[in-house]
Image 1 (tube, helix red, strand yellow):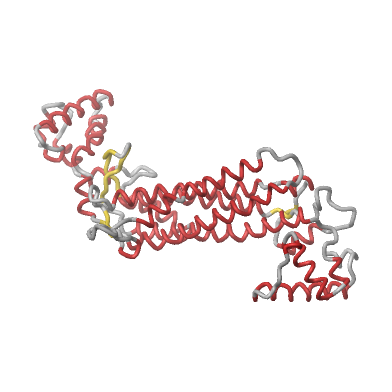
Image 2 (tube, rainbow, N blue to C red):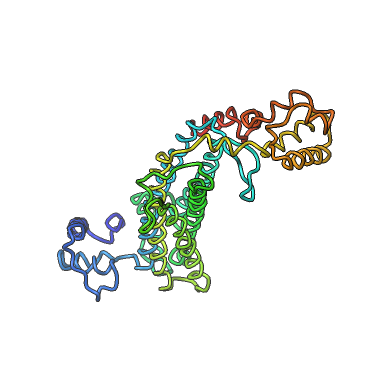
Length: 411
């Protein structure tokens, strides 16, 4: 660009480009000698370039400042890393979708307040995480769009008197637009906050996922068994198989949330334009990436190896989890919901008092509580039938789940 607008000559351009390629090679091979007096990477490269090619190297810094350079560096870096993050989220979603396709008719109890509520399918439960991760991917993509704005040419804060072609540089670097205000260009780190916000919420979703697997693989639930490759033993108790990977991912959530809070705190008192406080953005971004990327990768490998005890899941989904279905049956017969709620509540209390569950009831047992109950009400007292009836859009019925899986496949 400097050559195009006449600020450097063609011969100087060739010397600078060749010299920079040699510097890059030295850094890649680990032969580049850094000096603390260089202050930062930009001056280190410029010093070495001048030593290699002489006077043309002194023109490298024309029309720019370390302020707009470092803003550009972070945008270039994050643009690549966010693309990698989107791919990792996609890989985890794909693993869950593949698993859901094999568990469309597997019955599992759904929970509220960690109490058994109503039967659903395992596929529907897994797809809940797919939806979460889908929103995570959208947030990363939105962060990428706001990151892809080119700040170079803003200078220290007041641009330049030189006739720079900023849009040419933007095209060369693959940016869709340039920053509209030079003061904002060098002091803006909102795009970093956008990334950290998306990263923190994604890590929270992974933490919830890990907590659920930890519960499912406990002896109390017994819904699944940890794969040996992703668990550890106890140093004292030979029978133990511990979900260390899941616990570590859950525990590291605080780090990523902390990175977001730290970045917001850095920005909250800064006057315009650039301030050295902004150097702290690197540690926050690097830490979030080092925490979240392996968590996403490992969970994508973990889920296909998790083994489910579908019989135990099915057994837990019966019993009183079908009470709402009975109430909705009465509503379908014209009974007001509040009255139906009371009728079924009485049935539940009476049945529990004699040590039975709803699945043990006969047609005559139901009829004693309401004449609205017909013989067809007994069909409701099977979890498979209950789930199959929940075929509204977004519901857990196998038919509804298949529709959603097709939509995800098309996307």
